Picture 1 (cartoon, rainbow, N blue to C red):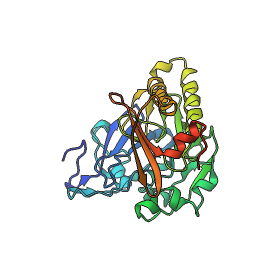
Picture 2 (picture 1 turned 45 degrees about the vertical axis):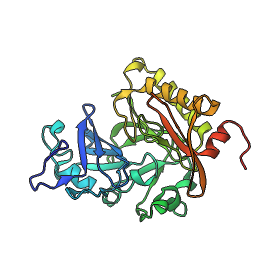
Picture 3 (picture 1 turned 135 degrees about the vertical axis):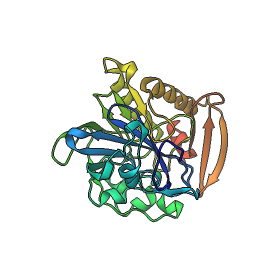
Picture 4 (picture 1 turned 180 degrees about the horizontal axis):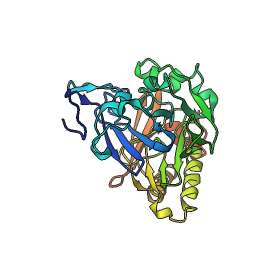
Length: 312
């Protein structure tokens, strides 16, 4: 048994877990069939007897025949984690759950149904139509992937919503509406631990992929708001950013500012185009820093709109 976990029955889990802070763990779905490797966050609040889960990954889908444990909830409740004193994060399911959806894309929601049977699932209220039942199969990209869209009740919450347990105790996290990547994108701010969780708004090393419903001008506004939030902290250089892929426990200001500069270079034309191609009937473009950390894939229309050009 590798990947930082162990099971008596030797079923290799689809997930690994490691501690980020006193209360919070990073869970990674490390070998999914979509090659997304989503980052999932679990904040354990013992005083509220509740675990907050941010995103639920790809549902354990894998081509790896050695992976036998594919349920995120089962992993959290049964698999020993070395960074948690060798115990499961929620041994025996004793603690309740709150699930927060950073956005509705398939690689962040396919593991939600086992939680939704007895736990609230929170999402952004910024664009209710985007996550409405009639639009959800398309906007989640489940249709495009040929996937069954998960069925669950989504509770939409406002900007600056303070998350509490079912008993009304604080979970120490504030919801921030952060549209741009998608209209329903949200972030979580943990003021006590100086941790910012940003979903797919940005990340390093892997391409930042915008869907048709994304907006670069809105994204720039979101990034500016996040930079301002971090800057107002008395120890801003110690605020860490944690993303939906690839990036965790990195200096928030540096990552936000550097990624913003890359996107500025894309829009201004300073960053050369690497590839232009047709995907699902839409012209897409790819930009990638030669020796940098950031890259972008999006419909060409989004870049043209950000430049103020008329799009046919």
